[in-house]
Image (cartoon, rainbow, N blue to C red):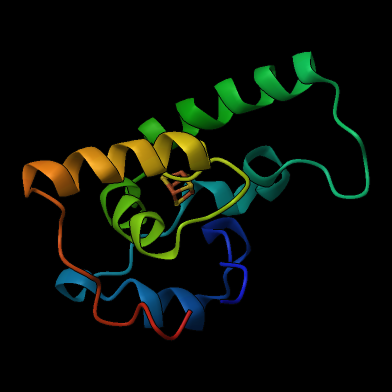
Length: 115
Ligand code: SF4
């Protein structure tokens, strides 16, 4: 499986293909500063810096108009790094497992196989 593309680094056509839920394509807040959600490239980030960055990224997610659809996307593509819908990959996996166990896991998005 290919490494999933974080919403902050998706092109508009990729977003349109993946996030056509309810005919709407909410613009991710993270597009304005992708490194905030994915971390700096080519740099070893000290744990304290990472924790601070992720805390801010979670705040951005909390106010993002794409939060719900992003969470569904993340549950489907199972990222291995970054902050997605306010959660780390480990938190996402735990959250998805809880929803699946309780039978409340939302359905797939129509274009998920494309992005
Ligand atoms: S919820 Fe967070 S990760 Fe998802 S699109 Fe919005 S800002 Fe980006």
